[in-house]
Length: 121
Image (cartoon, helix red, strand yellow):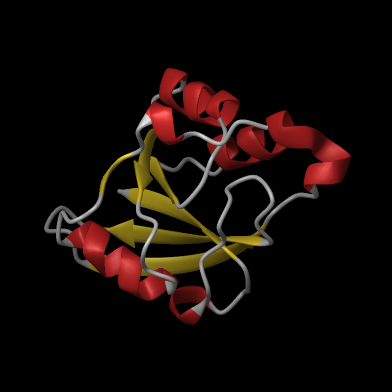
């Protein structure tokens, strides 16, 4: 299973999480085995939101082949498009470090993103 976590820096598991999906600088892509052990971490620079728009960022993440995205904040259009394309969107808003939230996900302590909490902009 591969999960993309919006991140502020290219520091992998030590990176600060981004507060919003589309405008993050990087995605930290965490891969898990069937027992939910972390087996790989890759840092991917995000495309420029201003240049490619929200739809371009969404497609960029879809092209990564992730199974899910774990975001602190996300608008309704990306949430719906990910869901329609089989990518599960998870939410966790309290943990600032990528590695810590990746571990919470592995422990089953992260829930699904509630559409009612989607950003409205």
